[in-house]
Length: 157
Image (cartoon, rainbow, N blue to C red):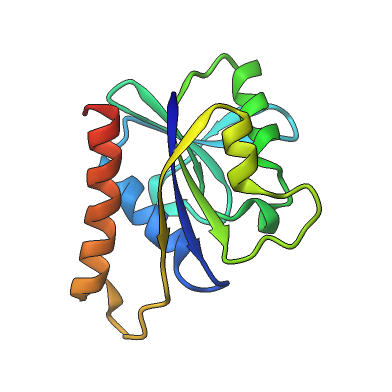
């Protein structure tokens, strides 16, 4: 069974910033935006990861990354997975940002992931770190390390 981690938080809680830092530290060999309209991959720089859908390759394993929540992006998670299947990309893991509450019709990330055969191994609730240099805090470092360690352990990398 394929696995996923959900990063859950309010608007402006730091979900996409957290995901960008996790992606940087995973040191991917390839980074792409998943263009769901044209059903294609577009090369991207890791520093630009922000509210969008990405595919990163880490040690020849594909991770589908929702740096913005499906409701914010107005893209159902099932559709993004289907696009990857059409592109013949075998997703090994998913890292998905969600809002605390999904209020749009047909947007239930937990249900959609389970329907597509994904086991949600962790849901990490994050809050905004209210410090100017938040990247230097122990809370930030622990948050990032926990996510990275979980991904590496579950991908055997």
